[in-house]
Image 1: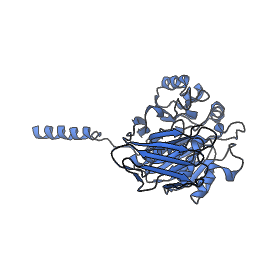
Image 2: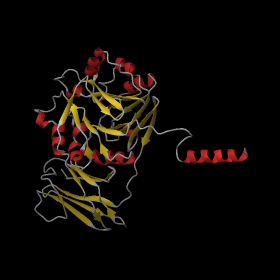
Image 3: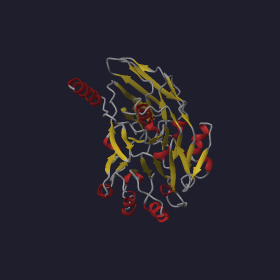
Image 4: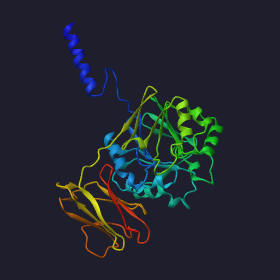
Length: 387
């Protein structure tokens, strides 16, 4: 009896150290809302199948890849584009060109943010990937592993504001349900409520970054989530999350988590209808690498390594604040102690070390900031062009 007790105690100690408990299983139904500023970039998993809902800004690249690495994601069964706002679609181009296998592309069949179908960001990204877009509206559904993604909205075109043409998707699985509200505002909520569609869920991805134009009392009480996730950054989008909405979510019993509370993202796992919420943080790069110079006229960026050790730049990237242009350092790129590295573009006349295969990246008359990010999407250094 004593031997069994000692063995049990040892086993429980091991399980405790590994973060598990006897008899517990890690659910494969989860949602990871990437900390991408005020942007949306959300990984959803069920039955071993993975989809990405929106791709944030171009600068969200590293954060999305870090989330995929953490969750063991090597391919995407689907990419969904809820609507055409830049903070949801700006990252589609790099994603399409990344080499990540993507099973299918989906987007809202109703939109006003672009002039024609061939200009739709999802269409352009899918074309780069050699595919076409599947258009979705209320009543459609898409399988995801052993679960299903039900499209609840849009059911009618909103000609005034594309936020109200957002895809609103309900994941239904054996482990529970997740309602993803895109950038839906009061007007689309009212239309959705009028359809009588069941909105109760275990997890809610709150609409429109929890601004003051979303999350009516009728909608929140109909959803009554146990956990609510808000994608926002109050610096980028002031007055979010709206205190009224946060209080309303808490009044229905929801645990509220905001992506700006952590550097990596909010991970919610569902097990038997019970959500568990984790705030994921990413390591900060300890490096002497910095942006030393940004020359607008010559379209040149210079990096310097003021540290004592060489820095591998593989997977690091730079983004132009004004134009959103993205440059990813190639495999093997490195910067030794005390060394400098110049990056030029197709507009650069002088010699340089690496080519940013674009032109007129740095604005010549308005403020433009070049930000350097590590491979995890953590900002390392930034400098503007002096205007």
